[in-house]
Length: 254
Image 1 (tube, rainbow, N blue to C red):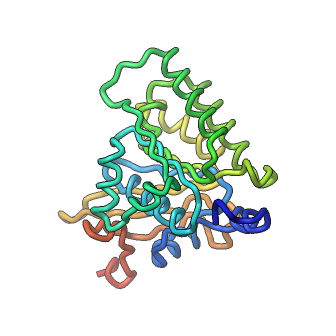
Image 2 (cartoon, rainbow, N blue to C red):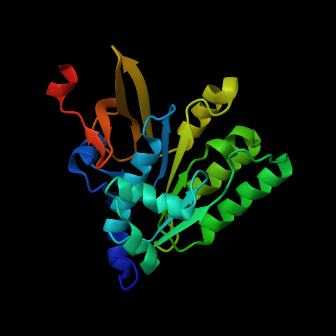
């Protein structure tokens, strides 16, 4: 779809959806993720945010999109290895140059307000100028935890403009970001209300323990252009060899 595609085929892609290449998962999130759009994947610890983002990344590459992944929690090597373990091998598009992985080390790093502000501004400019149509940021948590509210909202507002449907084909993008539900202590919920309002798609993942068993669920809280009802909740499991597996209703009720 990239490279030798005509303008009309690009337009067709932009009007379409990113598939996860997993039909059950696509059905659970309303058929896929619309392009272009700003997507928020929100959840608590170990709820599956990274795996869902990687499943979408895999699907975008399978649809021949040019993709950039910004990771604050992995090196390039560990990112590729993590996906390969889940049977989501993206080494070929990485070697071909259709997948770019940008590793930014933020964990356990002391950032001044000025440096963090510059980092966010630089990341924004990078997304604006990069040729990729699809961007993944995993995770926004470390940046948003310490950044000023103004920097956060400016970042999201600028990104939102890139994902508006009336953008030129050459500049319209989809940006996926993962974020911990409690990324900023007591301020989290108030800020999340504003972040969710700027997002075209809001997917919330949860992980709970019930009767000694781990229960994970995926909720489509907001989906631009979807004909399906929002707030749809589906149970899922994380399989070590296959990534996300939707739990059939019969099993969920058992």
